[in-house]
Image 1 (tube, rainbow, N blue to C red):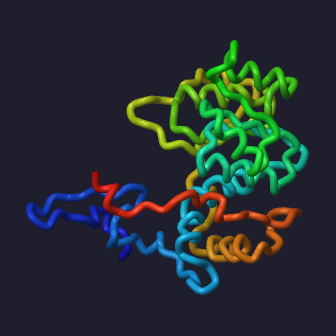
Image 2 (image 1 turned 120 degrees about the horizontal axis):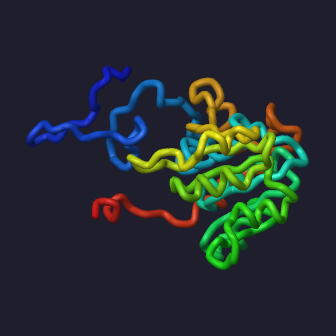
Length: 249
């Protein structure tokens, strides 16, 4: 259906509205979707279980590196938060030819996984004796060209912003932040050329670009936006399956 500005879900007993998250609400066995959020795919070419990854985490991360930031070959990148979105940013930056990709996470187990996805350096803030942004500035000689905040924490966002190089550094916000927190920045901190921007769905156009991107990932075809061959292994993101019932509790 097309959006009518109202909720698409209502409780059967009391007819109270049930609000949907980010226009989809996919943790349901049956759903009603906004027509703009539906993309037709070939289930024989693209298994739905793997395609689900492209509907959010991989597209968001890869698109942030390709479309939003337009990462350049030989550049430096810092990714704050190595979850599925963060790992997708790493893959996108690697495919674009980034020379240094720094993964930042408080979970030491993410180091081994991060190396498989393409990080060149790993920083665990819990064992540092200085702020994260100072460490990144130290190892990069002034800061990274691009930083990506994939956590949804205002404090982490500030560290990501300060880790970029003055004059041209770009920070991309991918995490979902809570209300009523505001941007943890002073306007004058942007005076020297650092920039900050938000990204939803990796700035991919769902209707026109997602089907093509899905075929590229599954067939490992040459990407239109990259000089390198796509080698995304979607199965790498799949660690285990869970039934719907545990999500009810």
